[in-house]
Amino acid sequence: MNIDYKSPKKILTPTSGFLYDYSHSLNPYTGCAFGCSYCYVRQSPVGLFRKQEWGTWVDVKQDAKEKIVKEIRNLKKRDKEVTIFMSSSTDPYQPIEYKEKITRGLLEGMTEVPPDFLFVQTRSSLVTRDIDLFKQLKDRLRISMTVETDDDQIRKKFAPYAPPIQSRIKAVTKLRDNQLPVQIAVAPVLPFSKKFPEELSKVVDRIVIDDFYTGDGSNGKRTERLKIKKLYDDEEMDMWYGEDTHLLALEQFKEHFTADQILVSQEGFKPY
Image 1: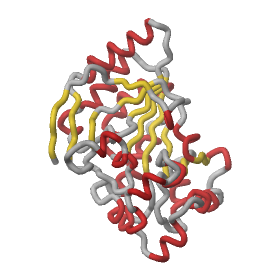
Image 2: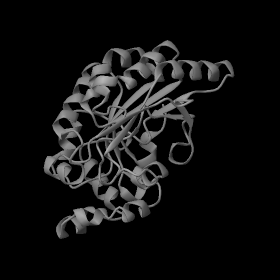
Image 3: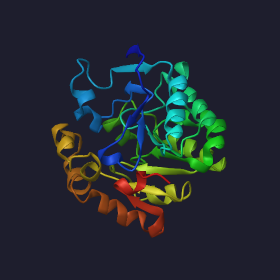
């Protein structure tokens, strides 16, 4: 893993597109060590124009805490609403976060100068380290944990460097037990067993379902370019790959969640 250190002028980025409901996105790092095969960022400018392959490099953003405090304070002085999506193109809990604590520093800054709303998207159990800070933000917070499947062999096929499924489930349980607002994002939907919806219903009461076509920002075109089809065997292709995959998942989750507990694609990632 190639680790570099950068000092950007600003830490908050005005949003557009999929995240238009938010005022800003916040990426503590550039690049991502998890390097999931289906990640849409591989087909974005940051993924395409870097010489190193996606998943092999991470840039650490220095002085992040000082920047977030200053930027939110300046926005508030201008009576601007500050709603933040963390993160849109990296996981805020990179393995290097254990050492660098950039994300923790940002959260510390936001407890000093709180945004109106903070959405935290991750697939790492390291998120539980910051429960003490999340508790200070809980009235303006949602944490979203990606759990695409209940089959860790499937996880290893599509995202071999991402955290194990069971570690994520345990993390969600710990967040819930601390009365923090948490959801699970089955995003993208990968092949899962019939037990999956029932098992998740024991952990959370809010599920987001998304697939390659509704969630990659290009109606599946980015995913086609990534050649994700090759990772499916013939039986999986027939059932789990296509424009209606989220509908298949939706029907199965309806057996264990009420209609208002299941959100599809963008609806599940909106603020508040």
